[in-house]
Image 1 (cartoon, rainbow, N blue to C red):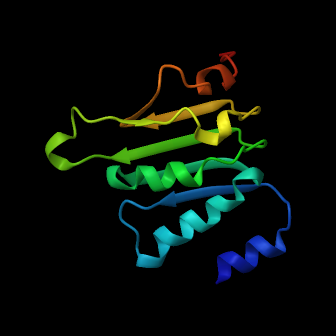
Image 2 (tube, helix red, strand yellow):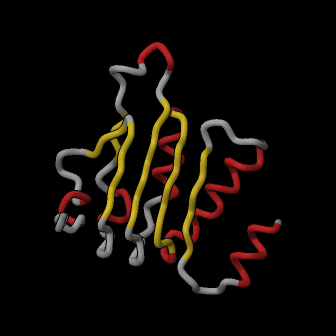
Image 3 (cartoon, rainbow, N blue to C red):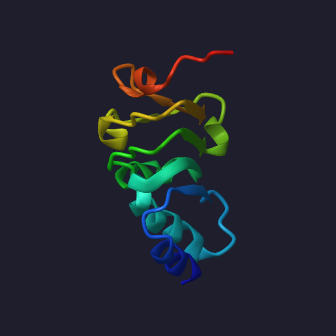
Length: 127
């Protein structure tokens, strides 16, 4: 309830979404993360950790274009028996194929399709 009210009051201001749906403190936490992802078009930073079996739902929530997104961090927890060999691969359609301000990408136990446009979105490091 508090989150919905805050989002409504913030109107169109850029937001930061951080969610851990691997071990949510309450069952409502995971549902809330997906609900907040509806605000992807005004998201500046997105950091989500999820279990391997929630990736499809996460991908489906991330199909809108995020014109303000600058930082992306995705972490996928794999099945315990296959933690060292299982990588989740995200679809090319992630973010509608466009995130013009994306500068930083961090992926843990997941990968992008070789044809994914995400690497071409990321500005080269100046460091």
